[in-house]
Amino acid sequence: MNPSPLAGPGTKVLGIETSCDETAAAVVVDAHHVVSSVVSSQVDLHARFGGVVPEIASRAHVELLAPVVAQAMIEAGVDGDVDAVAATVGPGLIGSLLVGVSAAKTLALVWGVPFVGVNHLEAHLYASFLEEPDLPLPVVVLLVSGGHTLLVLMEAHGRYRLLGGTIDDAAGEAFDKVARFLGLGYPGGPAIDRVATQGDPAAIAFPRAIPDEAYDFSFSGLKTAVINHVRKHPEVVTADVAASFQEAVVDVLVTKTLAAAQQHGASGICLAGGVAANSRLRERVLDTCVQHGLHPFLPSPSMCTDNAAMVAAAGWWRLQSDGPTPLDVGASPNLTLTFHP
Amino acid sequence: MLILGIDTATPQVSVAIGGHEGVLASTLSARGRQHAESLTPAIEFTCRMARVEFREIGVVAVDLGPGLFTGLRVGVSAAKAMALALGLPMIGVPSLDLLAFPVRFTPKRIVAVVDARRGELFYAFYRQVPGGIQRLSAHQVGTADDLASELLASGEDNLLVGDGALRYREAFEGLHKVEILDEALAYPSASSLVSLAHAQALREQFVKPWELTPVYLRKPDAEANWTTREQS
Image (tube, rainbow over the protein chains, first blue to last red):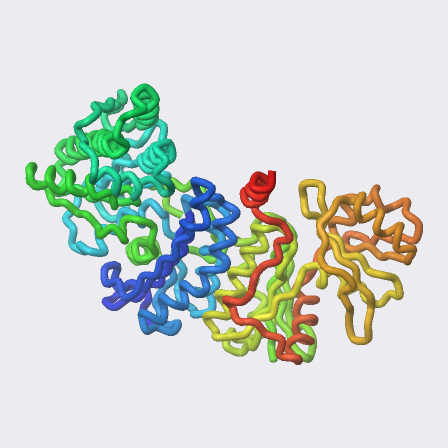
């Protein structure tokens, strides 16, 4: 048994992430020093289906997890001498989550160290702390990915207030659907980002949907507007459509996030989730923060998309606050941000 | 050499530890659909009952399936993690072998049958040989009617074992020269796994954690549909 695994500097956490189509493991010291971070993406396995196929994802996790964990440990120069094992227990695909949870609990048992079940959404929030461990709270976090669109006020560690969310499609889902319609391939986010650099963001004035609730989002109307526009104007330049669509999404995201930050007296704005890797969103958040005297916290793109370093970081914080998670825990595919496993 | 055996390919979770002196301890939970929740505490408890430290374990064995996909993955993932953490070799044994092994003291042909859901069965044929069993066929996927025709055509005495045989009891019950074993032997057990793995361990038939692959016997639906589309 390692001495005092719950506290003290130099606490090494092995993180494991298998909630969707990324198999990942990382070793992180004290929630901010990333010693190793290995991500094996299954994107090629799912690309021909235009989205993640749960059974294919689960099977791939079983094949990939042992080598990915081994690689993360080799790169970190550790051989079982970690102080805790953290794994995503939800939300996500049940079959995929179970592969990581089962492996992580076994590793913790065999090594005689605590296991920590991590909320995937909370882990995304902690990506910012990997690079800015002393980030001043409160902050407003815009969490945007293929499955989630959340605007969150983080008041203290482990204390969140959900300000708003999407009422229909997630932001990343809108990117995927529009990219598929435009024939740009899967995943849609990076594809649109790439093509949009060649286009004019002001070419087409797509609608900016502002739902009734101040901090909610809606993207399905925008998606329909894009489809209708292209059908009506088949000669339109695809790059202009991509750039204008992206601008409409980013506009709404940035406007509402800024309003939330100002209303709640936040020190800054954090970006999180796969869509936070979008270059235009990052550029606009940076500009907006500079203009309004807010701190921009933009994790590097590899820490925005699913990874295990953020899981290890969130696990470290949860270990401090709540202690270990019992070994008879399972996966929670429908976990929400404010409910901790 | 101590072998830890993990079996989660059925509605049950079972763990056993043993070696040349037989099984030292085993646990079984049959409450179903709680594989991930039950398995880790079951491993801990089984080793404690056997008074075995994790570092004394020499081999990790696991039921490879076919069976319930999600349950199967929970066990395989835990087994791989354990082998990785302790630097141990692994042995994978198919679920159908595990079903046939405990009923081997019969001159009849043994038919191990697992419920594959969706109206299908996973099955294979076995015969007793000195010291164990021999599989006579590849693993097969088919309906109860498919299997019933095969049994009739064989003209042999057949002994059916497994939850698949019980679920489709009415398809086999009236058949000439066919006997069905009861619930007590309907699922594979980790104790059989340890015994079968021990025989393989003596022959040093090991695999590395990253070489071990579950036996699904069925493609993911999306891939199966894709293939159909490509061919049409």
